[in-house]
Length: 601
Ligand SMILES: [Ca+2]
Image (cartoon, rainbow, N blue to C red; front, top):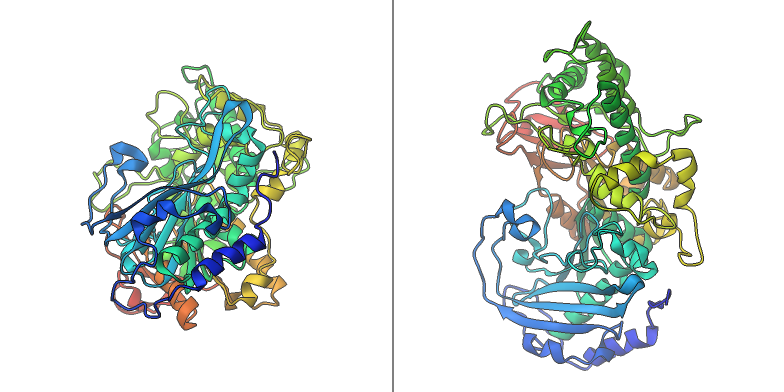
């Protein structure tokens, strides 16, 4: 049962190609509608043999008329996301490999596809997020806070749940929404297999519906979706021509088992020292720093490093030069000489934050995941149109949670803890998803002992986490040979995946490519930005357009102009994001709110 997904049968694949080869393929992809060779409503009747994976079932297919954009409803969670303007399109729901898995759980890889009537001849795979488990909207999120979506640009778009369903595979005795981590095949589907299967099915559906395959294929995602983006460039280098990986968790198992555990244990130590416990009797991370405390640290970083780039403008462009020593000198200025006051930090708080930024280490002092870049986005007031007392919580929601929570609720001690004990370790350990269970599990981790669980294999789980989940390979030779292009965007104040780790990977890739990685991979750091978006940052940017321009017109992006949103200290400010290692620098004249007066160097 472990190998339910054999490698794709080349014979079946050829059959799928042949079955549409006889059909007259339209040659133009202009503004005129692309005549459907197989009409939308007929897609549910397509024989399974025409799909690369013959377990594929098309459950529904119907035409949606064009519709206007709708504002989001944050109270409704992911289902309440804003809806962009949509063109007339064929909407398809399908699934691959329906099966009974471990512990009586039912699994399938479920996908969601939208095929526009006015097709631009291209394919767009929308990456997932978190631990996946939801099928996604398939609008084609372009990342960078863009209002339009790939579907509206004419792309055929697919999204998918990576082989498990949070609404179904959700046992509170077995890690809640990580229940699938106890099923060997579901682990592999989540790690890599579902992206392979769904790419093939989506391309087959495009051929069947339009009568020809896509001229170009793109993969775009952030966070776990950014990991998926890097993964496909390494593991399936023939599938995509252009890839946009934002805030990529390409070493997600290490960021979780080492980074999240380190941060949690460090803050728990501080909470114990301060005598702060939550209703479950656990060290209460949320109360270890007030919003004012984090604002003081943010101010210390600005004081130490804002002007390193030559311009005190609230942006630490030269974050590479912003060392712990420079920040320590400024933190000393706001360290309490006696008891805690609202205007100073306790020495134990300063020590804890420095320990977090130094990164997870084993007892030998060896770094296990990554250190972090000192940047202002760990806290401080939002500014702009935000209420005067509104603080940026985009960093603390991961590490410690919001201050006013009734009990521990950081993402590290919820999603992080349930993932660390299941999908990121072998074998998985059943963990209660409530009553302080996740927090207890993180405090029980011993980094010296448990690091081995990344490479461990057992008879039931014969594929190690390192093998099925990491996306940190620097061998992109096949992707490069196919003229593939990869754009990476990463916030310098990302609290879950360190921008320093992404830079470290890029430097290694550059070495492997004799200093010429920039010919096919470019990395853009966004100072101040938290995870995927938010923070005191220019977090609105069209990196996808830059990627398409590079992929299709061979114009490499040296810079991407980005805009600051309403809830920042400088709404409407524009700045260039610069391809690493270049940084943004003021030319010395003109408005500092205008990207035109900055260069990348
Ligand atoms: Ca500056």
